[in-house]
Image 1 (tube, rainbow, N blue to C red):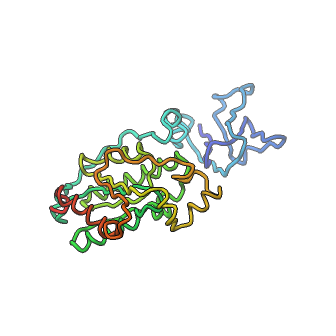
Image 2 (image 1 turned 90 degrees about the vertical axis):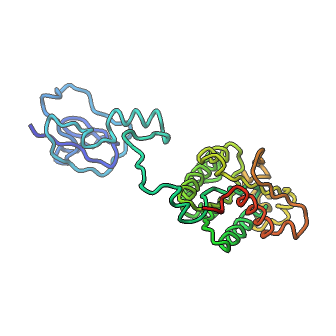
Image 3 (image 1 turned 120 degrees about the vertical axis):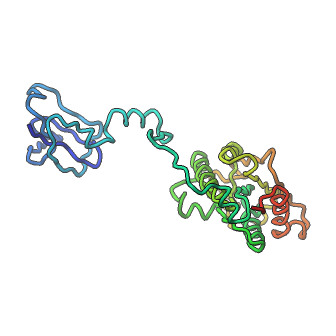
Length: 294
């Protein structure tokens, strides 16, 4: 016996047999909403009702009486719905196996004559994170070392453009950048991540993604008063005026690192606080740890 199955953008229909009842309007079977074998349903069976009352574009396809609708639409299967409900966006599909490459990390590092790592520069807005990141990238480039910078603002133009500055979105912002930085480090690149990343827990989560020692946390230890006096983007002024809510340092906390690898402290001395001098301080750490060798 042949029947008709629904192919819709999502299962948001209200239907009954032998027609479809939408309010006071009944749609005939010729519209192809649903036909089931007569042996499956008696005339007195209740309606098939979906949770949503909105209709979406559909088309009808022929299937055998024994075929399962979920075979044609796996997203509707009981297992998938249950897993999505329990796990949410933490759901990890089964039957996914890591595929090992014939070229390992040590091979790439030997080729580049450097060791991959993540330099995570954190601090308040206006503390000089992006400026130091650029100076560091240039200084390493001049030494023949390959780097890539993940700037917090730049990443929000693409990969993270769907995220806001709410706490949960900030956490997701950090998570994504941490995963990308991990890939760069695995390639053998010295990845420089420059972003406020105000929450200690989120930074620690990124640290846990990498092998011991490959996450170098750099704290821009600059007082709020100095950052606010600089205010290169005018954000502190807007925050003080109440036009920006949840701004780090004003009405949202910044959690300073407790055990970071490098501290770049503002002293007021132009020579010791120059971006180039700060970059050289980070490079000294990398040299001592062997990251600038293959």
